[in-house]
Every structure is written in C-alpha cells, then in structure tokens.
Amino acid sequence: MNAKKAVERQTGVALWRQIADLIRLSISNGDYDQMGMVPPETVLAGQFGVNRHTVRSALAALADEGLVHAIQGRGTMIQRKERLSFPISRRTRFSQGLGDQARETEARLLAHATLPAAGEVATGLKIAPGRTCIRMELVSSADGRPVSCSTSYFPMDRFPHMAEQFEGLGSITKAFAAQGLADYVRVSTELVARHANADELMLLRLSPGAIVIEATAINADPGGVPVQFSRTRFAADRVKLKIET
Amino acid sequence: MNAKKAVERQTGVALWRQIADLIRLSISNGDYDQMGMVPPETVLAGQFGVNRHTVRSALAALADEGLVHAIQGRGTMIQRKERLSFPISRRTRFSQGLGDQARETEARLLAHATLPAAGEVATGLKIAPGRTCIRMELVSSADGRPVSCSTSYFPMDRFPHMAEQFEGLGSITKAFAAQGLADYVRVSTELVARHANADELMLLRLSPGAIVIEATAINADPGGVPVQFSRTRFAADRVKLKIET
DNA sequence: CCAAAATGTCTATTAACCTAGACAACCGTA
DNA sequence: TACGGTTGTCTAGGTTAATAGACATTTTGG
Image 1 (cartoon, helix red, strand yellow):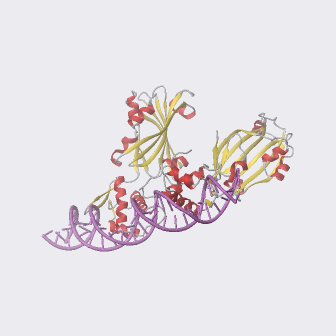
Image 2: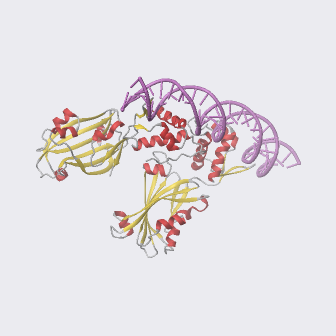
Image 3: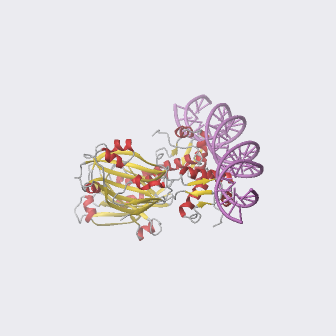
C-alpha cells in the first residue's frame, strides 16, 4: 500500500502523535512483517505528507514505548508487536507470562474494600455467603499502556493483608507468597467478549465502541481450595489470549 | 467535588483538547445537571490548573460541536447531552429529573385499557388477582427523540380517571395529584438489558439489533401502599440511568 | 574502497499552543 | 441604578510543534 495516510492538522492532537498511532496500528496489523522493520523515515514522511523530522518525533515516541528500535545506517526495526500475548494455562500469572514482550509492566491498585461474599463470588471461592472477603480493583499496564483492569476477591480470613501486601510488592503472586501461599494454580477461566462500558473506556484509555475480553477466573491452592476469584477485562485490540492445554 | 482533574502536558495532545474531552465526559455523566450549565471559566481553569484562555479554547470546541452555548454575562449553558441522564432514586419522576438536559420533553399516551390484574402486576400492586386495574402505554420523548416507552398499571378503584387525567395534564405525577395523591416514592426498581423487539423498534425509532434497558418499577404512596406498577423500556444508546442511593 | 541508503544532529524559521494581565460588554439582582 | 459575577476581546511574551535544509555517521552491497 502506497496510499497517503490521513493526518489532520489543528485538531489539538500533534501530528507526530497521530503518526505514531498510525504506525503502531500498522505494526499491529502486520503491514511490515515481511521486512521486519518500519519503512525509511523519508518514505513515511512522504506517505503522511509531513516533514521527516515530524516522522522522527513519532518514531522516537514508539522507541520510547519499546515498540521499535532505530539503528543508524540500517533502519528502524520492529522490536515487539503491539498485541501482547497472554498465556492462559494452569499456571497463569500476569506479569510472568509477558516475558520480554514489554520493557516494563505495572499493576496499580485503584481501590480495595472488605465486604461480605455473595453470589458467584461466594460460589467461586467456596465460602459461605456473608463471610468477609477482600475486593481489589487493579489496572495493569505494559510500557505505560493499560492492557487490562480487573476485580479480584480473596477470602479475608486466609489473606487478611492482601491489599497492603500488594501495595508493597506490586504483584499478586508475591502477596500470596508473603502470606504463606507459595504456589497456586488456575482452576477455571471463562471468556466473554463485549463492548467496553464507560468505566473500562476510561481505565483502559479506549475509544467508545471498543471491545473488551472479560475473563472470569478462579485460582486455587495446590490442595484445590480456591484462593482468588477474579474478573479481568482486557483491551481486546492490545492482547491475544493463548490457551495452553 | 472540588478535585483537580488530570491533564498531562507534552503528550502530543493539546491541553485544550484534553480539557474539552473531560468536560464533555462530565456533561455526559450529569455532573452539571443541577445547574444546567458548565462552571464558570475561571473555576474550570482552577480545577484543571491552566489559564482561563485554555479553558476558553476547550469550550469553543464544545460550542462548535453544539454541545454547549455561551451567553455573555450569564454563563455557558449545556445545550445537548450525548445521553440523557435519568436519576433513579426513591423520588424518581420522569420529566422532573431531566432538568435542562432537554429543551422540551413530552409524554404521549398511546393506548389505555381496563383489565383484571394478574401475575406480577397483581403481586406488585398487592391487590387480589382479578381486581380491575388500568393499563397505560406511554412513549416519552426529549427534543423530539423518543427515549422510552412504558407500560404502567394502576389500581382502578383508587385512581379511576388515570388515563383521562393524564391526557389533560401530560404527567403521571400531576394525574396522581389531581386524584388526591400528593406524593409517592419508588419502592423497587429492577433493570434488565436486552435486544429491542419489533414494537419497541417502531415506538422508539430504533434500528434492528438495538438494545433497550427494561426497568420494572413499583411506586407506592407514603404509607407504602403500591399505586403504580410500570415497565419502562429505555433506548439504551440515548440514556444513562443514574442510581442514587 | 566506494557509493547508496539509512539514521543522527544541528541551525533557523514559522505556526500553533499556553500563560498573563487588563478591560469591555453583558446579565441578574439588590 | 449600582454592583458582583460572567463571558468577550485585546495585547504581549514564552513554549512547543512543524517545516526546511545541511551535513555527519553508520550500514550494506557492489
């Protein structure tokens, strides 16, 4: 495709940012897969109808995200594809499976509360309705881009300091370990795809109409006792879920 | 809420555009419903931590969209909402909660009939099955756009002239008042979302596949005696239901 | 080695964005 | 009518974004 791509001026969005978004999209679409690199800066400048320096600003932003890597004399290599691949297996952990797909991953605790378990939460955790559990709202990002938001429930009596531990350690796995649970496995995962709601649009920085994949999962200790009930909503255009049997 | 809102600099997105997006969101959320207008420019500038001129640029963009309309000396009025916000609380009334969200609201009586109460209607109204009640079919519109259609049931013996009163007064609240009921409260509301059926497609002027939110509600007099059982179907893409506790 | 092609760096200029302050015009109300 | 509060307009200056051009540096391939 040699077509001129659409960038608009005076919309309040800088050209370099629009161009960065379009190049990211092209990478994600696999447009440059054969070459393994982005077209030369001069070519991109021609396609977008802008100066080479403007393209350089866009590429610098993508390099900052860790998406591309420029080498003088050779070109700008694609380092990572935008769709992060999440393995889903008996040993699913959030940050671990990402490996070197992202330079930096972060899970931020938005809110937490204690409340009586009810409905599917009580059923999933196999505790009596009314027993206290901890709810935590997380947003997970890779290289500064949010990829998922989740709501998790933990039995209060077994993991009373889940939220505090998580805040200090930044990881559910480590928070479990700090409270005496060295290992756990995924016992069930259910997937649903739907349109993002208003909250998800904001948390995941999506555009209206965007699609989320909702994964409802239960983790259990090695003895099979449930330790976590979670509902994670992934930004569908940023991830690929890989079911491992 | 007097909290400072988050705008980021040097992201390639102009501050005025970020602010315009946030104000649009607030309007859509109904944050300014009581006033019917946006806060003064100086206040917004303080909230966002920017110069007043920057806020003016944002408001100019929203005015260009037709979302707001500034009047010198008075303020910046909200002209149109993306979604009408319906408050749902103990004192829910249809037209009242809309405030200045729409220039003009109308409730049209399509049909009415008297029939014996049965099933959930009798249960909801707490009257013996077989006792006569009045059924009314309404379509409510804001600025000419239908937003909901509803089916309501009233006990015949207590409000024998519900339909006639409504036709004259154009409001359920007023029709109640004319028949001696000065006040009533919402005692239960149940919400369901589903695809619209053929009737709803026509009444609400929707496209096939559209979604409706079905609210099944019971209103009672101050003594707790049910006076109205209603099932309202909202065009999901035109409204937002705001649950107030 | 040389030339072509690509990225890196620098200067300079213009346009857009943001801040700051002052004052005019207008509305509502006391 | 006077006043406080709000939007409208103007000037001025600083910062960021974008364009333009020149040249250096590095890689690749003949």
